[in-house]
Length: 396
Image 1: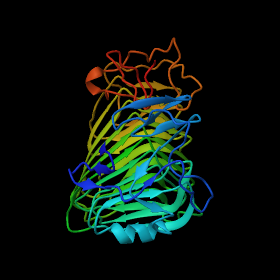
Image 2: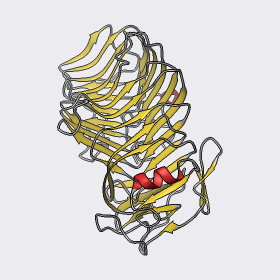
Image 3: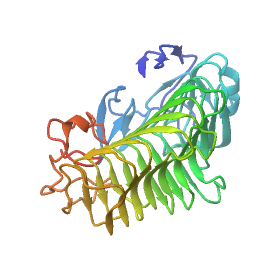
């Protein structure tokens, strides 16, 4: 998404968010008493394709480093509080016009339902400073969610639209999610063609079925996860399963540069109900307790991953294209039809203590990746260069 003064240009080429107001350091905070966007001490902010170092990590997708933490320095659009008292009232008011909603720092106890007919950007200060209960995108036009955290399950009901979630966090547990998911992506009938991109975002759940649950029954959906942290005690990180005997949907899912930890399972994808799934898993670090990767009768491609510390690293039904993965400290490396691929390693990767973990200086996983199957940048958005490391984090 590009940015010009006072406006945002969405991926579809539509103009949104031309300034009615702008939030800056002088703006009042939300109900939690925080301040607005901006700070006198802020660093140069990162452009859409730029990275700014900040503490042990980086700021990406337009955030700036302020006092060692990433946040959006400014926001041009209608304000909450300010122009509107609640996020829902702002969504209802401009959903037919399109634009940007700027939410101040604070806690807003709202389950926000978005059913806009024009593209919207909903932007908070950062995932640690702007919190909602949940966001429900229900067959809406293009929506981008930025710098917001939610504490209850959220969902996307697909339309022929583009959805982006970046620099955000979705956290919930079994008491808040009887449905069994943190974020649900589902398709209705009739068929639609949609895309969902989740970047630099945390999905954290406790004792529910899945942090991200994908149920595509009809249509075609492209889903990309890049630089995502997925953690879920007694939960699966990503689950793809239509849960419908009438499923005919197509899903192209790409998971790159992501960190799965403290979870029951990392990635599970099952097509027994009739949907068609293409699953690409490249340069991830998965340290889940029971299972790192499971796929059943689908097109699977997985390269340059670290599968460490699981009961079963990879379990499969059907063939796959794979190579340059490292499997270590698993009770069993392979289940079902899964077998070792070319250039596999089984040595200790010598992970460091960072979060997500990188590779120590003597790690055998340094430079062991296949460049043909590597993203250009790593978890932090830093260029990987010609020598591709395994896992989510490239050595500096």
